[in-house]
Image (cartoon, rainbow, N blue to C red):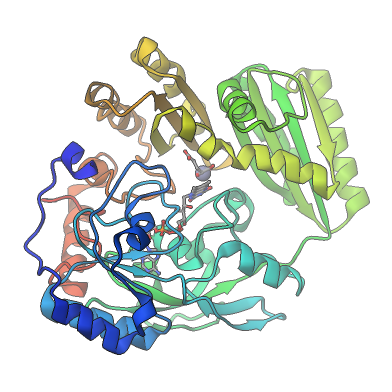
Length: 476
Ligand code: FAD
Ligand code: 2HG
Ligand code: ZN
């Protein structure tokens, strides 16, 4: 179990009594209070099966009022709570560590309003990202974020992790797109910052406290989000590239030559694509190359955009930056390519245990760590590969081993974080700190900032009941 691996001690929280269950059944109907071990099991295990909690109770509220009553009660009784959205988080933040009560947002999934002129949508936290995207697409808009987990993750989980994803390059991060938030504090107080305005400088911008705080400062119950316009023209290129330096050159060229229509610039090395093709039996539309690049455009004129991308391809094939490639605007073909890219995250799940690293690195050093870690692992790893949002300077390094092994863990950590810190990178670019990384947070955050985080936590959640053992280090 994870808590053995990380040597964490249960904090002095209350333990659940039958009177507590009775109270929860009195405010939620019985079917929304889960106590059966089999029903609870999936809520205790994270997506990559790195972490497993011991919760005995899952609550499934339907309204903000119910969340508020649950938290007030838990706060009075000092019962710890682990908020859970789609449970696709990759840092162990979404599952309990010991016997925390899981508060699942799955039933808070109503869309409340959509203003098709401004593009602002208001919805409950448990809406699944892909459902929201389908809904707004029918009305000429898209969601400002997209990620491989879209069919499962919740918008509340996205906000709480400040999820990045595949088109951050174009549409920015959630601190820019989230217009308003309704959240519940640990003591049950409902904080209403649910404005739908583009501009609102009335005092402190409190919504930002909840964006990316991974459920440690409050529970997000509703969000107002800005949805960009559905592009008329979408084009996708998938290219083979000789070496990483050429990827950077290609990126500069893409920014210059595709300019305002560039919507994604992603990379993957041979082992990332090859593992995905082999393990998941997915087609690769081009031959084998040391590196792959995916370039997407979102624009308003199909003829103009496809001409632009095609001439980018032919020019860069002439210069040799692209060895071979394909460009398409056919939805089914684009889907095949995106599916290959989005499936990398889960491709090695059946090969063993995955150490996942999600780091920001200045682009000139972006890929340096992959060969270094490969060498460091020697024959211990099934594979070590790198891929990610190269346009945003965010690489994902996956180290796959047959099973968890503390010797391997100590070879990797803290080494990788020290290396990232040396080049002024971030030890977590987009997945968060969760349960896996609080003891490494200091590699990317100054003591002064960690003290302020700790002060904020004490102010917002004095009893520490919200997602304990996560994000904040034991002693800043
Ligand atoms: P969960 O995993 O359930 O929870 C995540 C964290 O938020 C936990 O700490 C949890 O306690 C807290 N939380 C959840 N809901 C609430 C709430 N309503 N209020 C307060 N706290 C809450 N991430 C990226 O950034 N970019 C990617 O490209 C990306 N791609 C992915 C691809 C795959 C295939 C997978 C499996 C994951 C990927 N992720 C990515 C990681 C993950 O999907 C995101 O972190 C996502 O935002 C988590 O949403 P969720 O609803 O599953 O949240
Ligand atoms: C992605 O970009 C996700 O595919 C997942 O952020 C990365 O699993 C990973 O390492
Ligand atoms: Zn990612």
